[in-house]
Image (tube, rainbow, N blue to C red; front, side):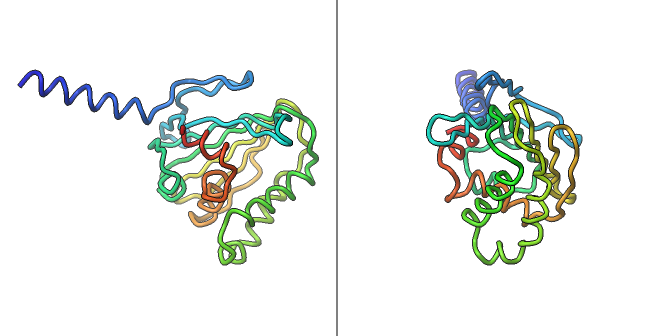
Length: 190
């Protein structure tokens, strides 16, 4: 009886530890293992490094979820607090390039019918990316069920887009089938 209880405890600890990431440092950026967002505890799900041309380090990013997962569909579609933190490592992009890149990637990674339906929201969110990139620049996106997706740029809240559907499109941008595979795998802890 004791052996069965011990084995069950060890098995549950293994499952729990395989879905939790401890604190991580990536290119000098610290990602704590957990944070409190909108009154909820979120845990670091994974981190990723965005590069351009294979060698220019653009940003280090971390994805936090209430319920960590390695399943992209679950991370995208579940109603839970979600938090993305990006720390930029270069100053090579203007606000205009950030805006264009956001729109282009939203179009490329989402179904055409959703892009058409949420065209105004995509453009609104892109318009909030109104600062030229600098080393140390930060971007935070927070999804709170019932509220929507909020963008905080360099510590300034830019706005919130209501609804789960747009937020799912936003998370599909980094986690979906058509997302950059290095980013997706890093954020999902794969």
